[in-house]
Amino acid sequence: MMKLSLLIPVLNEEESIRKLVPAVDEAFTLETDVVLEFVFVDDGSYDSTFNILVGLANQDSRVKVVRLSRNFGSHAALLAAFTYCTGDVASYLAADLQDPPSVLREMLQKWKEGSPVVWGQRIKREEPLSQKLFAQLYYQLMRRYALPQIPAGGLDICMIDRKVIDTIVEMREKNTSIFGLILWSGFPPSFVHYERRQRQHGASRWTLGKKIKLVVDSFVAFSFTPIRLVTYLGLCFAFLGFGYGTFTVIRALMGFTTIQGWASIITLILFLSGVQLLMLGIVAEYLWRTFDESRQRPPFIIRDTAGF
Image 1 (cartoon, rainbow, N blue to C red):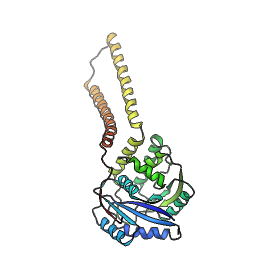
Image 2: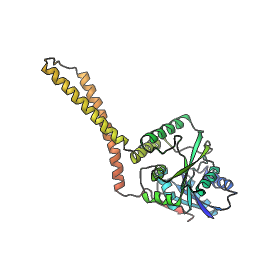
Image 3: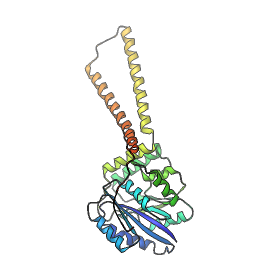
Image 4: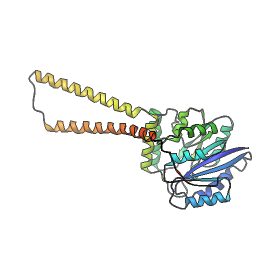
């Protein structure tokens, strides 16, 4: 017998979680050599999600519940699930059942064949056009400038071996992408393709602000491109300034000095000031994350647990 831990971060998912365990059990009916463990992490829900999870834990010994003290973000919640799971292998699973539990059987078979990391990759997205465009742009940028091993279509769910789980937990990085850390760790992956379904219950908490934070965290954690861009822009404007200064001196020596208008001067000042502030902002993103890591605050804080 082997144990599969299902890691399920939740935020106000009271309409979905009651259906999740039965749906997974139905998918694994024929897998008689697999023991399931459900590790729910309540990432600061303010509805009845935690109470429902406690009820499930009281009814089913396979259900474990971790409640965070506040909303730390889905990647911190997933790290908490990795920390508390006890399975030989673990897989992320969205609570809204957009990822069909049946795909986990295929991923588990790949793991049994020897793959320490198995990725579930969508072949079709039943999502609004804006989300599709954001996902496509995000993965293209990450492939080009940060993690070239990311597939072009992106990654959505993963199943990882106990050795990989322990590696990720030992890192305990903040302001990062868990999926990015798994890719960066270098364990050889395999892939399973599936079609993701539309959300059936509740509303997505994946807001624009969280998407922007993910982009910034991913690039700062895995790419030096933004800071290198600052260097290139600085050199570019330094050469332009030197060239324009040389041109002005030559004109003055030749007697062609004229009084220039204020409009061009103000335009240059505003433009260069904007570029400088942009450079400072990029540098500040790196400095803040370095400072945040140096304080060694925990990436999450546990408020309550149930089922352990």
